[in-house]
Amino acid sequence: MKAQFGLTGETHELHLTTEHPCSSYGQPVAVTEDGQAIDVYSWAVYRVVSATPEEIEEFAAAGYPAKIVNRRSIINNAERLATKLAEVERIQARDKELLAHVEDPAQRGVIERSMAGRAGALSRLRRQIAAERGESYPGIRERIIRIRLSDAEYSTAIDRAKEIGQTLSDYLRERLLP
Image (cartoon, rainbow, N blue to C red; front, top):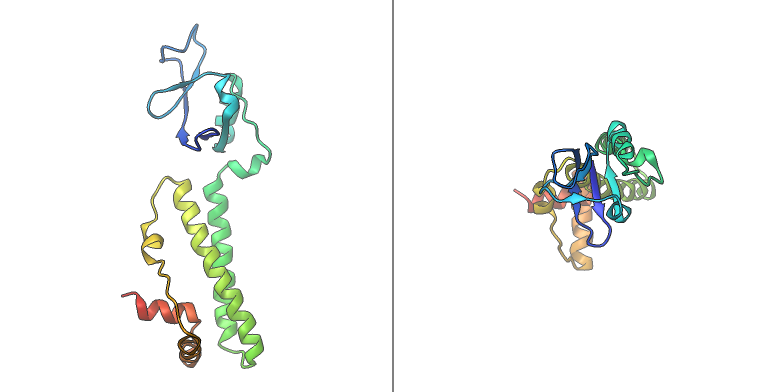
């Protein structure tokens, strides 16, 4: 189970054990990854970030009830995010295919703006999945580049992107990243 300490914002991986000095008479105690015990009174300051249904039941039986507003949001969060990621990628691919057949500039603009917004959502979902799994995601962090274009440069870049059938983001990414 992952839980966040509300006062500092630190997230800890927790497990129950009876092999800790704070455990008495066989009563399990919640322990962080570094061996620090959490008593049932301090538990009130923790917020559960992710847990399996079994972990929620085990912790509740040991006196650590999870205060869950939306039970679904913490169970298998990485799986839920991965499903959402796949759906957004499917929509993005569909719009990319649709864009190739649309000739009206106004409709193309609407589709391109939608795709740009979804590109940001995809990046955010990938970072969230990596964080949920305890992985770092340097691939995204290293590839975020902020650039400033003049109006003329922006117009030129958009025109060139349209000429080769790409979104502006894809066009710039291709030119700026090796």
